[in-house]
Image: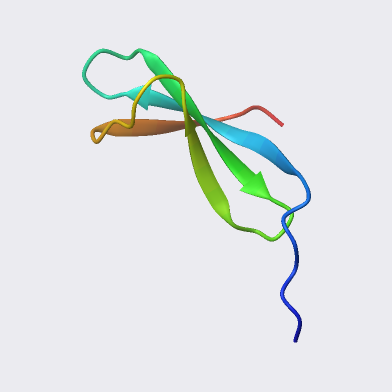
Length: 54
């Protein structure tokens, strides 16, 4: 089965720093089903994913 190309993505969650509650990025889902974070500044370790409203 051929592999799908990544063509478009949409934000599905906000990434929040668990300690400071600062919004630090977004979690995107590609048309292939793959999920990837987009960080505002730098990658964080202790985070919470806050799902976007439908």
